[in-house]
Length: 433
Ligand SMILES: C[C@H]1O[C@@H](n2cnc3c(O)ncnc32)[C@H](O)[C@@H]1O
Ligand SMILES: [Zn+2]
Image (cartoon, rainbow, N blue to C red; front, side, top):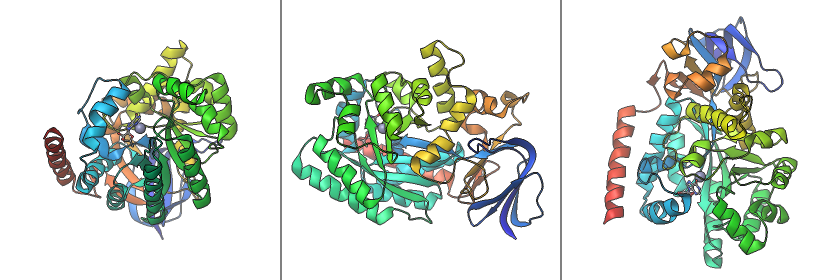
């Protein structure tokens, strides 16, 4: 007897090269793993999930965020990145406590579970608290301590020590739901020597690296002044790049940079809403995909988005490429859906992002019984252009039901909202003191 069977749904497998879509399908889950995907099964299970009227698909993978920044949702809007970070966000972050991070991350987990994200990639501070919140919520996450040293040798040692302590403590924990990584913030906030040390340490520990790269034109100019080359060439020169790197943003790329990223197998997290809100620019996603690079999708934090809705992110990613290339065929729905599922899972090194025998049972069910979801010709089209996060009925992570038929089962929804609101209020009071 299996643990769970999902029946009656319209299944979208997203299996690379073998994508299948069929109605009234069955997905069998045992011990957190998908064991069967077919039209009919002889198997029985403890839990039967009726997906009638729903699209059964892989959970969405958000490959770049700062979860606890939910506490800064709407705090400092309508500013360019450098002013936003230096004058508003960093001074406020200096006042964050463990309790803030725990409550802010739980709020983020709630929002993600409700809007169909089953795994997220996070870089922030007080990361033990983020990990504890992930452990509690039941979601999957890749976590890294955000290291910033601005070339200061003592700070560099302390930052790497903390990054390493976090990796040792949390990698593979929470039934394997937590993957730990190193998180050097960016090439213009970390020195070249430090980035080299971080990458060496990550290789030694066998873990990945999550970093912001070439988000703004200011970074490009700073790097050219300091090193006589852009961030991509500087990082390539120190042998930083391989398929164990998740580079967030990558907006200001030359054709030569794109070639390097593709050749080295670097994973690029595209964050269109944040890039548009901070007016950072438009990442050359079409060119990156054509070059063979693995491009995935992230929301960035709630201070620059201001939500964690990956459905919204998918639609905006598609529309932005179309208007920037003046080509309506650019970034079609199926491609952007891959970015938000299989490509994201590949970037984070998890066996998910698809519904296939042997994959992790991270699955969502999206409601088709809504006015904006009818008629129904093509699932990918509806998921990218018509749906939003509030159409997610059911979320399953590691074979466990975190939300079923819109009812959150893994946490007390109202309590999380209340606790995070109180934490945010106290925090802003401390910031303004
Ligand atoms: C981990 C640190 O990163 C900061 N941060 C959040 N969003 C961005 C962004 O878009 N670019 C650069 N840095 C960002 C966050 O506030 C933490 O200080
Ligand atoms: Zn970021």
